[in-house]
Structures are given as C-alpha cells and as structure tokens.
Length: 124
Image (cartoon, rainbow, N blue to C red; front, side):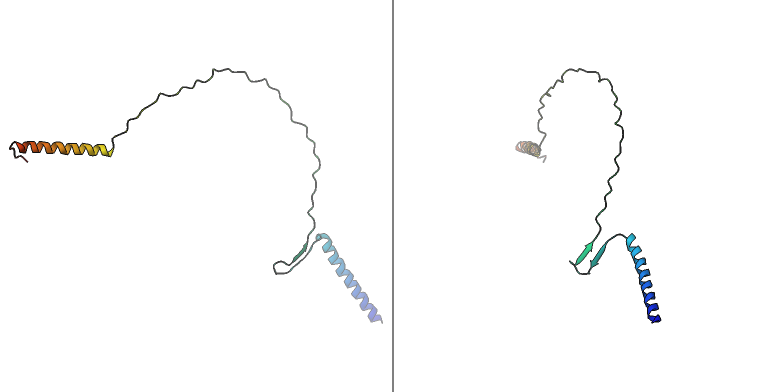
C-alpha cells in the first residue's frame, strides 16, 4: 500500500509540475489556436482580436499669428491684342512645271534642228 501511495503522489506531483510548466508557457504566449488540414477549404482558426491603443491626448498651443501689411497696389494698362497681317504664300515649283519646262526645251531644240534641215544645213 505504501508503494501505491508513493507512486500516486509521484504521478500527481509530476502532473502538477508539467501543468505548471505548460500553464506558464501558454499564459505568456497569447491566446490563439488553429486546426489546419492540408486540403483546400478546411481551415479552422481563432486568433485574438487586434489590440488598438488610443494615443493619449496631446495639447499644443496654436501657432503664432503674424500680421503683415497688404502688398502695394499696382495698376497697369489693359493689354492690347493685335492680329498679325495676313501672309499669302505662292506654292513652290512642282514636278509638273519642271516636266513642262523640259517638254518646251525639247520642242525648241526640235524646231531649231528642223529649221536648219529645212534650209539645207546638215549639221545634225
């Protein structure tokens, strides 16, 4: 009977020591528990609510007020708007004009040659 009581006392004191050890660790760790299963969609979790500490009210004096005189008034004449004079541009030479000049030059050359041939001059 002594052995049973001694074993029981030893078991109870060990359980009490383990409970005290784990009780102290959980008291400082915060309160949260969770169960997670590695399958999508199965998560049970309970976390502590976030703690918000409102800051202490602070008083500061209002900023100093500085007075300065108003800026001097400056008057200026109204702006005058003037439209610029119209400008007319003549279009530059185009390819067609150069083509016509070349055609005219060929015609004159042809007339000059034909004129000489007509009168018996065989220079060309």
